[in-house]
Length: 430
Image 1: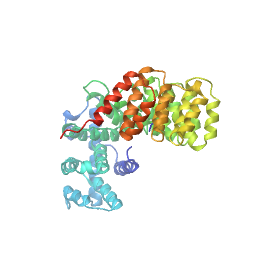
Image 2: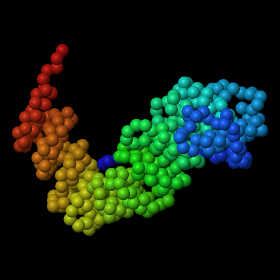
Image 3: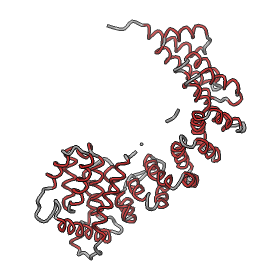
């Protein structure tokens, strides 16, 4: 059968740090800043830079004020150097205590201290060893000054993780600023990798805007990452809502990818509903996933799966369903699976045969190889004979040779296999 997650703990931790930092800035009103308090022009995007810089600096001022009032590790007396405190926390082994102190540590950093702490984490390797903590740190910095954080990440990191994390945090509070930066700072061809972070940050608060940004992306790995950020959000609203969203996608390739991902998430819990939905929306995904749904159904209730298959009209859907039934049987009882193909021969297509061979080979290689002749595509048949028997020769050479001696094979296949046997029998060079 055909078989990519941020840990749940990361999502919860990021939410916690967002709440804590947001709490610190909520009590003060926005203060107008003079020009020398704004981030440098080189780090500002072309659009919305003035307003973004003012808000960023205001947040930093409020955060510093709060730190001083509570007498934290970054109070005006400078009792603890942040890099020393970073080293202390890195030695804490209790995960709960470490998380609590890490959040307190980040909450107490002033705007000017973030860069040094980030640099130290990267230099010491902690950014790789503790990606969750590193992500929290970047998120906190983005909440105070996303432009400075992005400027540092752009100059000092190659991996997209840092910029995407920062952009996700920024987009969650200032979508227009994050979108503008992502568009202004991408100069390459193809999909804009910065949009992955923006879409991730928008997904919870504005999934429709996030969807429209994803739809603008060309077919790419980045678009797949964006899709993976959005799908869980719609699933939280219910499977029906998620299915409606997926089927509303107008780009065929994107819709197919979304259908497969959604089917993967619902097959085990709701194989019947998944099969119905796939069949009701014919697509490449239907051909690739209906067998998985029937397979899951058969594992729970073989009779129900058989009844579902028998009620389908002749055609691709019925053949796909048969493939699922055959797969479910083949790994446990290859003879029963072969009997199903004999009984419903008119529904057997090349994909049914191919899946039967691979699923039954481990249990009964001889029966698996004998059924390769059912393939109607000559090239596919010969390739499968070659691959399967060569594998068999490696597993049980005598049995494979005995079968070859008593069964006719296409001449080109027989010649290739004989050459393989000669190489296996040749004395090894000393």
